[in-house]
Image (cartoon, rainbow, N blue to C red):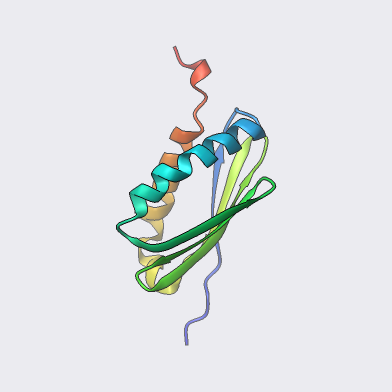
Length: 110
């Protein structure tokens, strides 16, 4: 029998402050939900302070995790079932890309 693997952790730095980073994540949830809709059977999430807990059902497998918003970074931790670990590198890369774009400080751009 397979045992659960260690959680996968992704950290995305930002310069927005905690409140603005949380606001952007909250506003981005709709587009994230729409993007993953073809792959995800169910997606449930809820805020508890500055922590967003989530649970998704993908390919009859459950993914659970949390997003913790800090003053200068966001920490995303999730558990993938062994079956989905084959795509872990792609998932982590995608999270880093989208997280950086979502939390980009546009005030420093010229």
